[in-house]
Structure formats: structure tokens, C-alpha cells
Image (tube, rainbow, N blue to C red; front, side, top):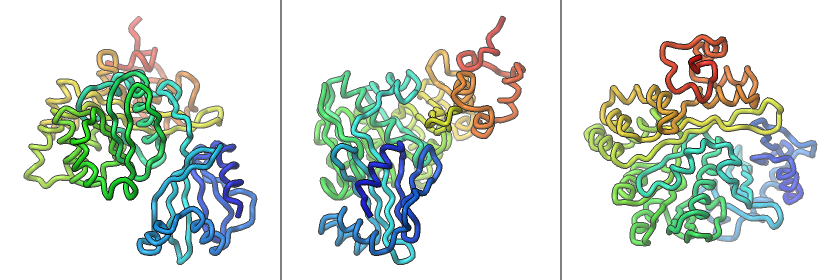
Length: 372
């Protein structure tokens, strides 16, 4: 197969992912949907040759041992791609994700304005969460680039693999890749505090050791960014606590209350005009009330209500508020909105102009709640 031609088609179609599997033609993911190309099915030998062309000798050896491998690559004039090579039913398969050369700005991504304020926090832990393909890496890249353009800071990233390439502007940015520049996340983070960082980006929190080091770095005065595969702020809090044994849960809550800056959770929704997707964004900011609620397992369950009410004063917003704004602006259809909101019945009532028992915080997203 002509991989470069397929990648050119991928970029032209604004596809997020390319899947190569024996017995099928190349398959693109466009706006969340899988679309096979009108080409001949790929053979196992073709895919084996493609994989060998992409991997140098040391990676070929590692793939032979591990049966799967992550790495990134650049193609002149097209962009960068994150590659996962793996085995399925005895043959090689590949999944490739497009990473643009140009990092989009926060406003271009339609992220809430408070994202800029969170980016410039001086210390603490800020998490971007969501399912695979929801825009976590793109959002983090835009936030780091905002720091890079406005602040004089030393930024160190630890990634597996490196995705977006940053160029030093006002800040100094060092990017470290697992397997190339350091052995593991744990090894890199063990030494990162001796590298004079102001900002630390951890590509993904995968285990207790990485999380403990991130919390330690945040607690000692550094700004730490990372991602988790969680759906919203309450689930993120519970996931963090679950990394640790029960006898440490109270201590972790205290540490989280003191260090957490906020949680930005993402979902991508199809646009009404069929041209791409828009992000529904939940934003939780760790104000004093939420700090208190983090300490109490029962009150933690009430955090969604605080998020909904904290719009005007703190810039927080719930998923349903974000979806309401997109629907009112004509960016998404009614069907998409109803399928995506947390509480469809309440959403329908609001659309009919019937307020719920508590409408605090909805004025920005739903004009019908504004008092006459």
C-alpha cells in the first residue's frame, strides 16, 4: 500500500484516526464515524511491510517481544502521527492518530474563557478528562501554548509518545518521551523536580506512583497538568482516591483539597451542519466550598450542584449547561442535545420555559431563566 497517499487522504478528509487491518481497506474515523476507503483490502504481508518501514531496528525488536508498540512520527508537509502497532489474529494491525503541526488556540477550540485563567495558575494539579478521542491532548496542548505565549516559565513534559511539538517562545519547553528520553513515567518524575520546572505536563496518570508524584509536585509549589480517562469531576475525584488503599483515603482527600486547581472534562458532539464536532465542557474549579466538599465522601456527591451554581462567580459550568448553550446557538441538533445531557427530563423542561426548583447559574446558558 502507499501509506503516504493514504495519510494525505486522511489529512484532506480531516480524519482523526486511520485504522489498518488485514482483510479490510484502510478505514478513516471522520467526525467520530468509521468510514472505509474505496480501496483494495490489505493483506497481512502488506501490513507487516508497512510496520517495518515505520519502525527502526530497536523498535522492531521491541515489537517482536511485546507484540504492541506506541510511537510518534512526522511526515513532511502533512503533520505528526501517533502510531500504535499491534497484533490481532496473528497479523499486524495499525492505528494512527493525526496530530497537526499547528497547535490551535483556546478560542479556536471553543473552550470556556476560564480555561485561560486555569492555564496560568501558579501551582497545583489541573486535570483534563474524557474518553479516548475526546480532545484531551489537544486541549492540554492549547493550554501549554497559551502559557508559552504569555509567561516566562520552564515547562517540562513527560509523554508516551510525544504528540504536539512546541517551540520555545516566552517559555522554555523540554519534551521527554518514554522509551527514548526516559524509561518510565515513574523514572522521569523521580528526577523532574531537580530540573527546575515551573510547569510539569504528565501525558497520562496511569498508576498510583505517577499520581503520588504528581500530587507531591503540586504540593511543593509546581503547576502540574495531566489527563485521566474519567467522564466528569466527581468520577475523577473518586478515581484518584481509588488509586490508594482505604487507610490512605482521608490523607488523599486532604492533599487533593489543598492541591487540586480544577478539572476540565470533555465530550465531542456532532455539529448540526455536519461539519465537524464541538466540545461540551464541564469545568470544576476548586474554590473554598469545593475544598470543604472534597474532604467529606458524602458531600463529594453534591459537587455537581456546586458546579452548576458556580458559573457567574467562578466560571464553572456543567455538561448540561454547555450543551444548552450549543443548542441555543444552533451548533447542535435537539436530538444530539437530548442524547448527550445528564438529565434529559430537566433539559426538556427548560426548553419549554419551565424552571426547575433551582435555576441558579443557568442565566448564561439559558436566557429563559433570566427574571423578567
